[in-house]
Image (tube, rainbow, N blue to C red):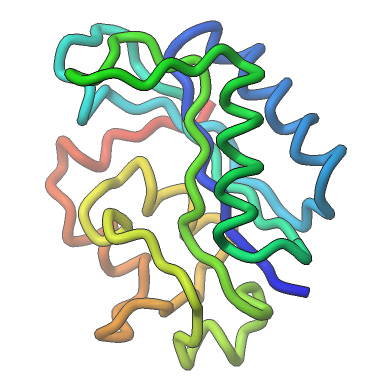
Length: 165
């Protein structure tokens, strides 16, 4: 069995979509931890005026990273997710694998940083780093072994204005 941190975001029917998506993940996987809901400004959706709700969820799964990614896309589709270029103003549900590996929640592996998949934006985006550091405060699964909590400290004040609800 592997563990994965799933990052969830929505800017449309935010509260109900987030809660329903958490329930959907709980019906499919063993959910070990989840962060509080963070409200963040849109970053990659320049035309959107709606803030996002973001959550990180630690799950246990027997699925490979590729199969898990396809499963998450299926769940997004259940919520009416439309992918468009340029990026849509409305994001009903966005599910990404942030971290995937064996025992990512195990403190010894967090310190050694042994993971199979690590989302590249964790180092740059508060909407990813804040929820992850809440559920895995000791996580160092980065190439340079820098703790996620120190990444949050390095972000600009404006980037850190994620709000717990």
